[in-house]
Amino acid sequence: MTLAAQKEIFENWLSNHKGLLFKVVRAYAFNADDQDDLFQDICIQVWASVPNFKKQSAVSTWLYRIALNTTFKWIRKEKKFNKQKDQEHPGHILHDAMTESDDRLDWLYNEIKKLDEVDRSITPFDAGWIQLQRNVRNARNYNKQHRRENKQDQKTFDHSIRTI
Image (tube, rainbow, N blue to C red; front, side, top):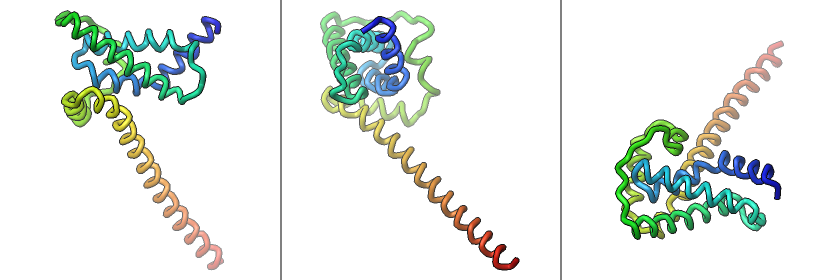
């Protein structure tokens, strides 16, 4: 694989699946510096994995496993060195890419913090699933409303034709 092809795939994956990676990061890293460090470690592993992807699973599944494995390695490393990070720096990659704060989402991630590692590994997909369900429900409601309006328009049209 050429470097250009690897770069294109990597950028595409990050663009299309950054939300999944952010969910994993937020589920395991609880301050801005740790989140940035973990996100960077995950990106490095994703970059290294691009040539090894055999298309035997969905890209999202592949990236999720990379993110989880990298996260668990990062946790072991953090526990081993017991680092306390106090330094602040501007331009956090993770926070620049996230949307404005949502109290419900903050509450959700605080609750996720209370879970053990195995349960936390399941949660990001569940949170994504919840959002997907909302989107599908909204689309269905829109379609129902649209169909009702079309039926009403058709009735009005039919009535107009009959009166002519």
